[in-house]
Image (cartoon, rainbow, N blue to C red):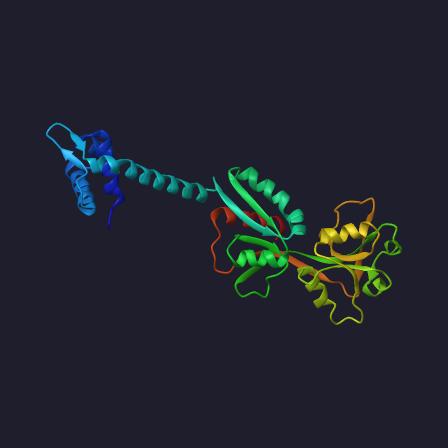
Length: 295
């Protein structure tokens, strides 16, 4: 069934004004053109919607039933078009972002604050999860953008680096290693080492970059989250090698960090997107702000 939206508008105008002449003036059509539009709609539907008399226009029974449906259809279309226009002009919308927890704390707050001041009606949903889950959320189309440390080898992903940071030693301030300016990996051997599980992107980076060294840490405690590692370190249960941004930014009453050398192990955190997929206008602007601030 080929129903023209302009035919619907013509019918609604005539039905509401009960006059072809008044409706023609309202929608800026000649009366014969308006009549042809209504007749075409009736032919496509196979029913009469209007009864024409010499004095006025009345709705048929079918026309009275159809009028609210036609109004609702046109109202929904207008609302949808307005919503698309507002999104395109950055006046409304939703940005979905997945982010590893350490990066969420490090990268997002000041960018979100600036973004919300500029576009106060655009909502932002942040899904904080592990590096692999962030990558999968982007690949599955569940979010537009991801901030993670994996994805550089994925053919379906573009990876735009934001920052490269080293892994550092995390220990208590009263630990004997805290007295040094820097610590070699070999120096960790006598101490109980705390690591994250093998499914962690950080564990993968450590294992790969330390694979050719003479000695690698043999974990005593294994946890799933970096924040748990810090809790165990703070409790004096052991030491850990953590990305620098996962440690408190300022002085801490208990925790200390020292550079790890021989070798220096780093990770690169960046923005991942599906290759070839266009971002929404709201998502594109958020991406631009992230790159401007950190890229």
